[in-house]
Amino acid sequence: MGVLTMMEAAKRDSCIHRLNPLSKMIFCICMIAIPIITINPYVSLILLAVLWILPLPAKLQDIFYPTMIKLYPTMLILLLIIWPFFYPHGEHVLVHFGVIHITLEGLFFAVAQALRIAVAITGCMYFVMVTEIIDLSSVLGRALQKVGISYTAPFMITTSFKFLPEFLGTYSTISESFRARAFQLDKGSLLQRLKNFIPLFIPLIDTSLGKAQNIASAMLLRAYGSKKKRTYYTVYSFGIGDLLFVLMSLALVAFAVWGKVKVLGGFDLHI
Image 1: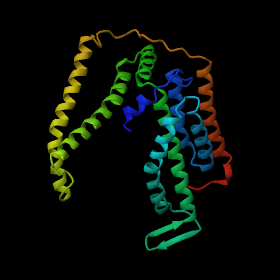
Image 2 (image 1 turned 90 degrees about the vertical axis):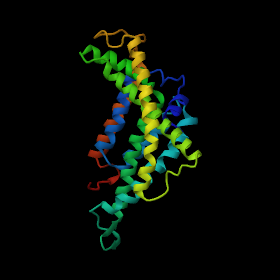
Image 3 (image 1 turned 90 degrees about the horizontal axis):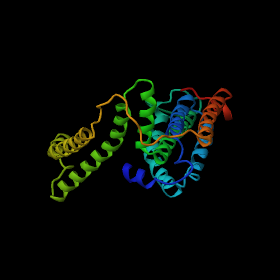
Image 4 (image 1 turned 45 degrees about the horizontal axis):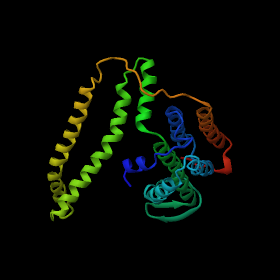
């Protein structure tokens, strides 16, 4: 499922979707900060349990769970395979053959690394599903404008979220059209394969420039940037639901700090 398709399918009317985009952005920042704070797998497991409950009030069961089940193996299996080879500590040796040195602690460390990455991935994916990027751009633009930062900065964020998936979709369409004409992209040596892909870049660049020109023309027709300050059609309030959501996010961070200080579950491997 493409990113744009997933974002469109995740548009729902729920108590989470109606929250202020800034409160949801704080939640996303917290989910990125927690794996940086601690590697403890017990903390990560508890946080993952919370993150897997949150789609229920957002009414995202039908899209969140299948997406994450497909995403986890792709993102985490490689970590589980690679990390044990690079963990230098540990007393319980499982494999020692030449330069290969795998310990039981290394396996635990790999699991812990995979879980902490899963926390960040799950939190960010949940944020993307419950947050309209245009709403986030609008509320950021309004907030940054108050401190003297141009509202064009959030617009760049919105454009990148929209443009990159479209760029990848265009590349997929062009490559499939070449293959439909019996153009062999994946044949030959590495150098030959690189040469095979060169013809794809011409229509890809031309299409991308055309889309960029359309965006620029639309901005000019709407006099974008003619004034240093702008008004906003939608004003986002900060209610009790937002306060509770932010407090929950901060509580999860506090729990991660507590789990690290108290060495929750006795897990204290060195990084």
